[in-house]
Image (cartoon, rainbow, N blue to C red):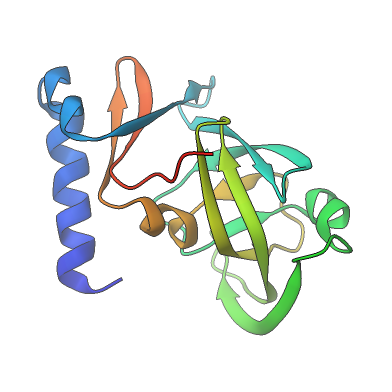
Length: 158
């Protein structure tokens, strides 16, 4: 994502977060989010049409990140393929080797299906993350907090 595109997405997200809810109408699609006690927001998704998971919505993450348990269910499914290994900076500052795969589909709340999505398998992670490798396919996007929804401009319908 280029710096101007990233800035535009951030400005759009900020505008919708703090502007009137009626602005949400400019986005063609929405996916309900669930707010948890920590204040984070999650969406429901399905990977490769068979593996269901909850995803933390995280615009600061470059990839959709999967726990080892969720990836173990995808590993041998058709359409899951290894692409490369990177060195990734973890939230705590550590650097780890992270394997990157492509999966055929990621669907959000049975309302939107993305194809050919890059996912990172994060060592030791206890949550799945909906990061920019998926969100950029639906850009521009925004977050609405009341009611909590992920607002999407480009969302291929199932």
